[in-house]
Image 1: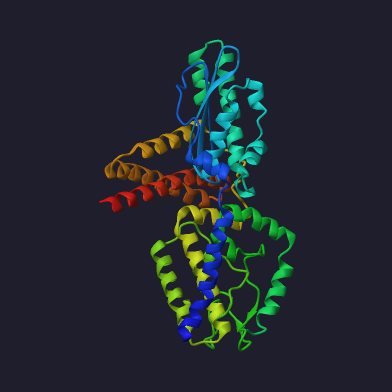
Image 2 (image 1 turned 90 degrees about the horizontal axis):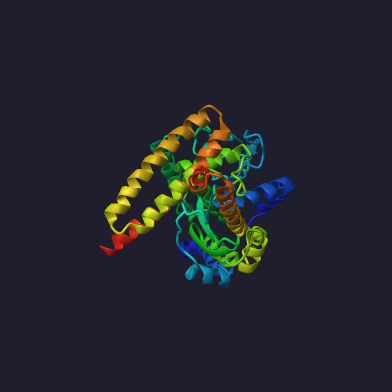
Length: 163
Length: 246
């Protein structure tokens, strides 16, 4: 009998933890993007019209690559991403690619992590995933600008992008 | 239950100022397992303690678990994981020693040993053995050990602090891609071997950085190690998957 009494304490705690799990679940918007990520893939990063943003989060070890393809009018016509990280990071970058498509460079640079976090209903502990997506957009835009501002064209732009 | 808990709780509440709360919140995001025994005072010298049962003064290190009267003691606020495992704060942990110490401690502290004892002792043994578990798992792996050592100095790896080294990130991305495309156990094993070697190298550099007291360097190395540790976790998952399919 004493054996039963002694286990009842820890067991009770365990079940509490178990019941707590659904509360900490991902929002349906995150799950939607996680299960059907939009625009996964890669584009040729040497292409002059492609800007590549590569960012990482040192605290969680996630890496995110976001690429944009810009037409001659300065409009983003395509976007691709590849993220190795948690569900929120994947969903954030997937959403980011959806949002930048069809936007001009300036419009894209105005996308804020708070908007991404709001759309995905990210909890405070996952806000940094949306920040990562914002940084990825920034980095991609920056890469595109560097590539296209450099007089040497392709070659020099590529060097600037990879260093 | 006995009134033993009440004085401790109030004392704890007093010490738990806003500053600690802020630290704890920040900390929770990174490393939950360390939370329980985070030393709440800046000085790691423990306070003077008495045995809750017989009132004898306790040696804060030698008698942190048991009084000479044989009664289990509650975990103290002022001690770090290294002290709990009978070690000094040092990155170069002797892992076999750590394992040995862990098993010895759990042999004496495990709640199963206390089924015939009072409720208070059961509670204390439960708290002690669970903090010993946390101390052990934190110190066992170089990454969590290094993070804990920085944390003892009040240094946290900031989430917003994006390490901007595209070359390194590209390398990580490529390993991840390689892993995602790996279609055989051999391919996964290859990645694992390479990854392990890189992690060993970083751990060796970390050891040097800590020895030189170069915490900035340690921070950089730790964030690198985190990326490789993530890859290691994925490799483990894949290996399990293959093991089940065989």
